[in-house]
Length: 476
Image (cartoon, one colour):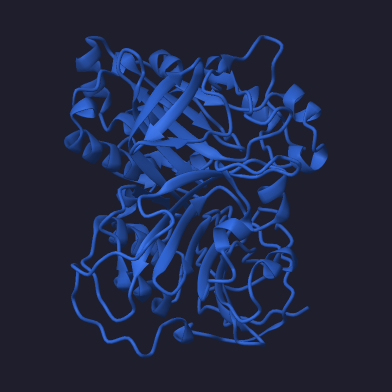
């Protein structure tokens, strides 16, 4: 199968990343600008007061992917549940790993798809291309100057007659991420009217910037103008490779620096977070990949989750905030090697849990922060990427991050210690911060609620520190 793309004027830099096989069912033959993604008969006019259509999830909800062999549950969804193919008109999808042969049967044959994928710039050039039937557009985003080119974002915009389903998740567009590994999915249905232009919101502007950073064609991005985002309460946090020229002047919009901006805003808007006490605040970080961590990195990340500088935290706690404090406050969840070996789906599941032995055995690794998680479905492995911030004496209040960011410096970035408003990021990533969540224990079971609704988790909230005999689930 051949793929032909329009080559960039500049040559792509060399990569040391082994490429995941991209399984494409259709030959790609021509360049497309995705102009057929827009509605030609739209007559825009400013409007905000029309009645809302009936929407399945108008205020947003969190679901888990339903694993093979598990019973149906209101907490879990399949890809078909999310997509609703019989109603779908067109869709934008982004993914790190793509299996078109598995994906295509989840859509009607006449559905227009725009798919942003990760790729190896040593083998394939950057560009936009279209399948021979004119219905599927593939986007290879910019990777200039990136040592390890990784487009890791998992976004969906699913267009129906009267609304758009916004989805942020940790699931790739491959079978095992929807059947074997448990992933977390945020879904919100947003009113859509192609004849109206709605007032821009902070969520809308940051989402539009995220799509442009991913080289999504402009006709697709312009569809956001016709979405009424006034009911959206989550915050977008993205990562973009910041070595590129176009991010030099706004690198603070990405990674952990962007997270710090969001948490500062939430502190201004929430009485509980405004009076946050660092001595009564813990941060739980889980990802299916664990990078090269250090105590200093945990300290930087902890500051960003509170929206405070080291000095501000020290003044609140009345002593200098140290790396040892960070190791106590930041709990890093990761599967143990025993869990990897004993999971019921075998090597196909274990291979998705990534940690290199030399990172764990390094002298700077904060091993006292490592915690074992207990999956909600016994003898399975969790592919979700979550950050849970819990504050107050009872740790009842806080926020939650859900998306594609693993707990790695490549995903969240490193702070520049000379100019701490900047981050240096390797990957494209995307996720949402859910504000004002409440952590509770009901009938002896931990739970999280948001806007009065339950948030299901892929693991129990009670994490246990690694024993001396425990080691992370190492990848080959």
